[in-house]
Length: 169
Length: 169
Length: 114
Length: 114
Ligand SMILES: Nc1ncnc2c1ncn2[C@@H]1O[C@H](COP(=O)(O)OP(=O)(O)O)[C@@H](O)[C@H]1O
Ligand SMILES: Nc1ncnc2c1ncn2[C@@H]1O[C@H](COP(=O)(O)OP(=O)(O)O)[C@@H](O)[C@H]1O
Image 1 (cartoon, each protein chain N blue to C red):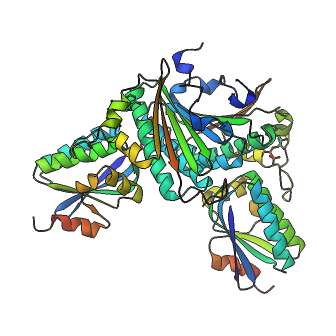
Image 2: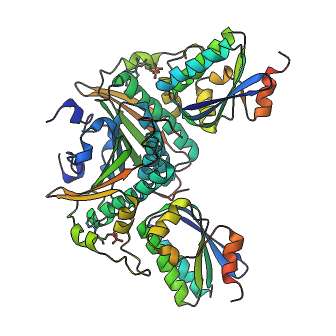
Image 3: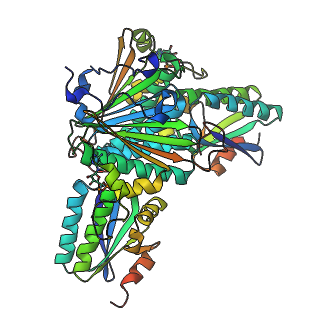
């Protein structure tokens, strides 16, 4: 039986930085916040393995957690039958993370164009702000019948001089 | 183009404990030891999230790391074009991990029947011993043209009385 | 997320443990704050020492706690926030809302002579 | 895996940092041990404090170090192994091979009056 349940969100990763799977790790999990810690733990370890500086790692993982939170909450609407897929890719001194959900997408151009931050007292609306602040590149792509793909790219200024695939710190 | 490169090892998980994907997390990565830390970090966090005791977590993760090391080294023979896939599943008080490689398998019945540990001075041959010692169940299954699947099951004696999906400790 | 309450002087310290991510945590928090306000507790310190990370939904939880405490005439401050959490507060400008302290001693001075 | 060498008394302490997993680490280790033996160093303490985990290939690296040191008439002991590592040594019975110490002071006593 090939139901929605047994299907992963978007098996064809077609964004630019994602061509070479040889340096890619993928994580797929149900639409539940309790899996976010494992995503964070994985990216923290992996980025250290690739000699990323701790501050770049923290930035990217904060942005990644927001993207995953939105995928779980707004994209998949906490449906446990829907899954979130994260593809982590390393490319010299930059790390990219693509987050795929199985939802209906949203008008991200409108929201990204928003110039003001939410009023300090609002309880919501800071996810995109965090993603923008902590990444060097933020791309959205909606694939009909599949879902939203959010690509986050972080360039590690400190690691570009280091050797490829350096040691764990 | 659907080449070996763009294919994941065994997309149909058919082992007994793996039926319900709603509590499953999957990790897929290239045949390189440097991804093992991320696998370890992810399972450590996730198992804590599911209220597993630290000693059960350590046991399962030691066994899982051995299974992944073998998948990388013996199964995929360090080929970066081949990938390892890990499926983590929670089921009440037990955690199972399935490790899929894209290799030729081996005569596990012969090795498992081996009664003596390797002589202390030997530099190899302790992986299966660790997997057996640290799990409650260890199953091997070879799928022709796909690869080997190693299933590790750990029952957490301390967590069975706890509520389902407990809090992070 | 586990929350432990401690009374120290004229303040209540909430020791959080885990990740602050919203979902079920939001409800737990709301109840804790309701009970604090019912008991007339106005000076709240949120101890983030054992909070490994936070997402924007978690920030929302903190803000909701802050709002209800302020509405009752009290204040909510935070302490022991990690670099990770500090930088998230900074980019969201919530550092302007939450006074942040590095030690329990200094956090408690926030409620002096009130 | 990073290896730093320190000489303390009649011993050399190797401070490891990272994960002990074989692969490239094996070669690094082999070279370190070759140089130790060339320099006549016989008393080796491997400090595992910053080793978060080890797999069976990593055990093999330790064993190979042990073998080469013993062949030269020396000894290799370990210190600060975590519970995780201790339990792996236990189930593989390598606790019978490696003397394991909880402090640097006690580890160095392994080489007294030799
Ligand atoms: N993956 C997604 N799928 C659908 N809608 C989304 C997604 N991510 C964000 N959104 C929309 O963008 C809005 C702003 O997101 P964000 O800045 O993260 O704030 P918040 O999540 O607190 O609402 C959300 O309220 C939602 O409507
Ligand atoms: N995934 C696998 N694919 C093929 N062969 C394997 C696999 N796992 C284990 N083996 C075989 O079993 C043997 C014993 O494995 P193990 O006990 O882990 O010791 P070691 O890996 O040190 O040789 C290996 O040498 C290998 O021949």
